[in-house]
Structure formats: structure tokens, C-alpha cells
Length: 250
Image (cartoon, rainbow, N blue to C red; front, side, top):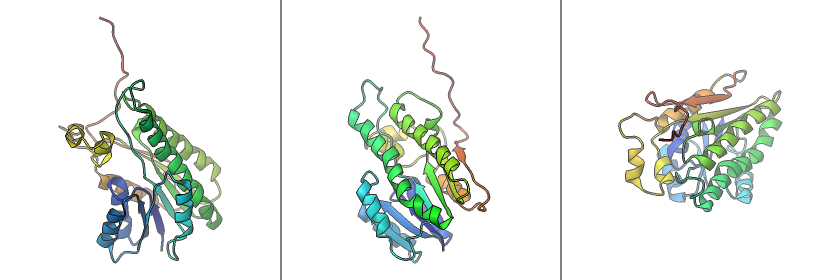
């Protein structure tokens, strides 16, 4: 039975992935920072095989301990979904709270690195595995206020490509999933709980859903081993890359 290890499984894309893979008979390692939400997810997915672990991916020692403590039946991870990540604020670079930048770097970059470095050796040794990283269209297309968030996702994109290059011959695949506008907990988190401001982001259009992204991730993971989806952009039909931002003097 295949095993999927999901970071940030208590909401959004991660939670939807846990449901999608459990439905297909995968054993699920669901991690996140809120134990009550992890327990609720395990109860919902029962009798599917689910192992939950309270984990903050920013804590390197905790990531290593979590992997080392995986019980039999969950300890040979076939698929790592590096989903945990966030955007904080839309302030300009000269106005932003430096702590927000640090949190995004620690989570989106360092947390992803800790999980990857911890679980990748086992995949290489077993000659099978797949790492799916949650990037963003913000890693390719800048917009005002995306400063460090977009930069962290550009890192995810380049790391994914570099890993693909290094893993040739190991049967370990790497995929970068790059969603555009998706109505999850992303905007409420970005706006630090301002639900009304978050709702306005999606007014008058139909954004992607967490289930849309989970379906795309499952499709990538379920391709035959000789086929690797390297990078996948996912857009709502009502969204497209913007024109260049030009300031014109009056």
C-alpha cells in the first residue's frame, strides 16, 4: 500500500489531499500544528489508515523526530506533499513587518527543505518516490505586495527543477504545482483573520477550490512511473497573467 506524507493537512489543499488519497486507498500521514483538527480529520477518514502527527515544519528537529517515529505501515513514504506554507500581508517592501518575511521564509523555504532532506534519502534508497511541492503562480508572475511571498515560491520552483536534475536514474519524481487564485484559508491567513477583506479577493469570479488542487495533485501522483509532471500551472478560467505594471507621469 502506498504512503503519502502531507504537511499542513489541517486545512485547505493539505486537507483536501488527505481526503483524496485516503479515498483511493493510500495510507495517509497527516501533519499539522493543531492536534484537534488532525484528530477530526482522522475520525472523518476512518477506517482509512491514517497516522497523525503534530508538526511545525519550521522546527528541523521536530521534522526529523516525526519521520523517525513513523510506525510500521507508514514509515516507507512514497509521496511527500510539501503543502505547508503561507502568505502574510500585501504591504510594500518598505512598509512590511519584517517578522512576516521571516515567517514566510521559515515556512515556505526552510520547512520545505527540512521535510525534503529528511524523507528523500529513503526514497532514493528504495528506488521509488515522488515529491510534490506546492508552489504558486506568484513564483513566476509578480504582483504588488507579493515581494517575499513570490520570492519564496520562485525558490520552490527552482529547487524542484534542480532536484529533478539530480534525481535522474533514481525513479524519484519531483513536481511543482503552481495554483493561481484558490478560495481556501489562504486569504484569511494573509490578512490575519480579516474574513471580510479575504472574501473581496474572490468577488465576481469563480476561483479554484482545494478539491481542484487535490485532484490535480492526485493525477500527477498516479501517472505511471516513467511519466513525470515537472511543473503544472493551475488557473481559474477568469484569471490570467497581468500586463506589465507601468507608471505614467501626468
